[in-house]
Image (cartoon, rainbow, N blue to C red; front, top):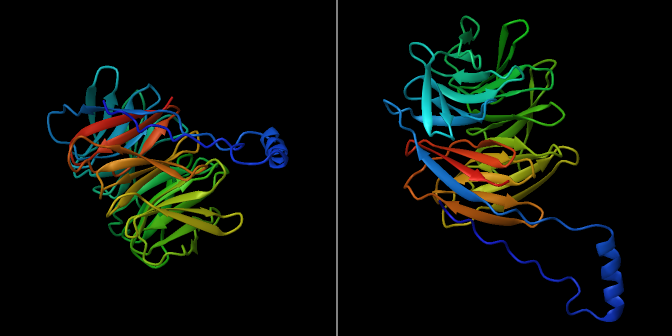
Length: 339
């Protein structure tokens, strides 16, 4: 187990000020506390003891306390039990190569399967697999990630240059060409149910008009930054991992503002980004073989390094008090407990 970095002590706001200023300072404090520091956290890891290498890629908490993961190399939906350390593999069919997985409103696992050019649904705990192929004639889209909107539709990205959705109630799948061609990668939904995605090759983010399926491009201020993954906080702000620039950035659609912070280290390569229930922002760094927790209120990074070389965390997801990390480079799965 790795020890978390110590919390940074905040200075006393009443030191080094005269009595008159102290009265004003006390009045400000009476209005309420400032941003709270992040709670202590610790990492735990398990090897995936499966019969064959899985190529673990993305993770999603399952409704039974376990964790799903995509086995991109072996073509399975994986399930990991943190209580026993046991992993199970559910076959997804010939040629399967799943990339993303999320839990749906129906408590099932929903996967983007680039090998089958289809969306896959695995009921839980029944483990029944249902395939939603993309419309006939659709080229291989290189399906990446998915998110459910406020109406229960699943939106997905294809790095080949496509964005689409599945309506589970009707069983319909629709696909549209993305603006500026190849590059659609990360995707997320906001608390209001809106859907945003980012383009790794195009270096922009975009909001989906859920009525038409069209995407409205929003340009980040840093050019050619390589927006790889995107996640919303509780206020609807969009956090973006910038693969090329080494930055973690945030966009507020309400006022159009942007801010960015460079990850610590000599050559950061941010890949995954996730915002937990406390609005703490998590980003994995391929360059430094670590994951960072970013406290936006204090603008402070906290580093959690991996004991194994080239962990390769490509996606982060969690549940209250838990942040899950799939190590695609080591065939391990890790958990940071924050509760």
